[in-house]
Image (cartoon, rainbow, N blue to C red):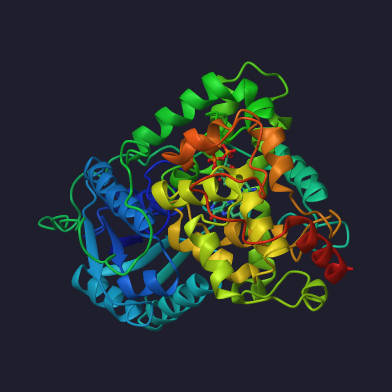
Length: 477
Ligand code: FAD
């Protein structure tokens, strides 16, 4: 009668619907003296799948460190954590079943994930477990409002953010009950002698790309995530609207890696703002709006599954564009050697830390798609391979938005001008100097990243900005 909880990108014990329900059920059965009514947890280490899905090294390392922290938290609830080592999603269902049989599992619990790879995997597991006469309980813990529950008056999905966010806020106000607490500790370890496995910290990601995870920037574990959340809400939330676009300032929360591996939930972020902010308008704040963007992209991905196959949301626009597939230009962008300072600084930040400021993500993505006219899919995959917060839905949404083939109400000709973006958001070039040093001292203060300026030891600009902008506009027209 053991309940098996399968953790994926939901590495937390608080506000975890699958875990909470499994523990509740086990506790009920224990009071009615049902035999073996405990809970066992499992995570799967699937290196081939990580590479196939472009997971970065820092993301995998961070994920593993958070699995370790989860193990400690689960031990406090008398729940052992087992590890399955298996190559990929193909081999996973059978391995899960073998583990389930070993611990006499009667029911499997997990939280849904939205991308198609994960949905296919989960459907295969569910089918196998049901065929063996076991229960399979699935929950929507990855989003605040279930996918498909925020629809317009015709019962159709919103295709533009602003009306979605309005409807989302309305529904949230009507239905939200706040984050779930951690479940009560179980009376004892379910199967008596089940020990948690040792979590490997140094295997499985040798083929993954990108920087190493920096524990000083993102220490693992829910306690650290919540501490950072409270610090952000207390110190930076009031100025978020003013500072969120200044990449040299700590104006944003930097919580995305925690949200991505599910150490923290959107619901917990919203509850923290409500609890710790003095702002009476907190619910309509820009930060909450950004959290709703995260929800929006998940709802879109869930309702338009072709997006998981890298189809654009607006194929009619993409049909007009002829991507150039210029290897040299793409590689210059990847290395941060385009000769455009703000672009190169952003790419260096990504290469060195696995993270990039949102404003700069928009600039580099616009540069790749609108000025180098490289296929947005190349940029999206490169981002996933390097980001510590690589998140399929948000990344896809961000890239399609940047290439103007996504769910966006703005005009097709929005092209970020790297020089103007620098003037507006990094006028003193603090961000640029931080990431382009040791060459920083060679930049004169009045150049502001002007691409044609003769700056020593900086690469020559890979394109003529004005010319490429014109060409791009012609093409999109
Ligand atoms: P904050 O400004 O503090 O925002 C709080 C949280 O809201 C973020 O942690 C994030 O979960 C969510 N959020 C904020 N902005 C967005 C947004 N535009 N779309 C979706 N969610 C948002 N975000 C990812 O988490 N993973 C990605 O792989 C990712 N790829 C992106 C690719 C491109 C091309 C672009 C333009 C944006 C991408 N984003 C991605 C969105 C955004 O850049 C990051 O969420 C943000 O920079 C994270 O920093 P923060 O935690 O300090 O954000």
